[in-house]
Length: 349
Image (tube, rainbow, N blue to C red):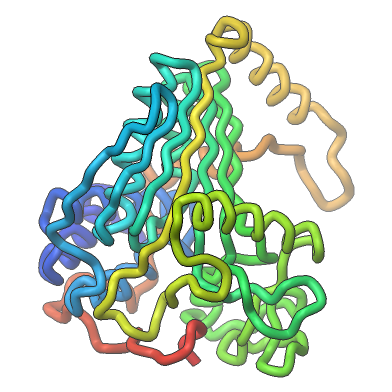
């Protein structure tokens, strides 16, 4: 079914508010979830609502955090999240990074001790909307097997990038350093669908097509994805003095404790390298060039990164956001949560 953007946000806000999150913070989370679902990134949308509600209700997300920006220099800062809801802390930190980059040309803001913060493209989109280049990356709990290994060590450890073009358009990509993000496994479980054998492995390190049998995610492009995941963990975890590698806290398990996750935003002001107008013109030329490339068999067109997501978002604005019936039923119910995420393994199986 489809619901209007406003109804969607109100449903999420109400549910999280009922779980114990103050309405102002719940509204920001709802905006991020709507951003994801409107672009058909269903793994990071409303499917996460009950998990957030359960962790909030059980105290694993600080509902009264002491957010603090610690400026280390003109272009470097640490935003202390106090294990508050990650979406809000990461959003605030990106706002600070944007402010700093406008003044100094460059900003690097680390976000310490937060919970899950949703889809990263939301944050770099904010930078692009201000005619800035945005890069964001964050830790995730150990779910990915290292290249050649059979046991998880790093997380999906995503990376997002945005560069502004003209007329509000931007090149944007958001990728996990595993073949697929964990949310895609959740999506397959919710739909009772098999997954490709290249996504994950079972407890013995063998490829599996059963989303309920997943005990490890495979890094994208083998050793290359393994290296990228390690880089993210170092920049968003080790650099900020946070638990790293196999010591990063689990998504599930003990939902009564904060997760102490790390995230990092890098924002670059093109005006310090060339005029913003010439930079945007060059980005537009890149977009046009990619669109004009002869498509391969089975493809209708070459799209620049972020183009199809923007088209889907425009469609959702008009037709409403698509949401699964069972998730809608949960959102309109009086139920806060059903204890479904109190699992003892990171994979909830």
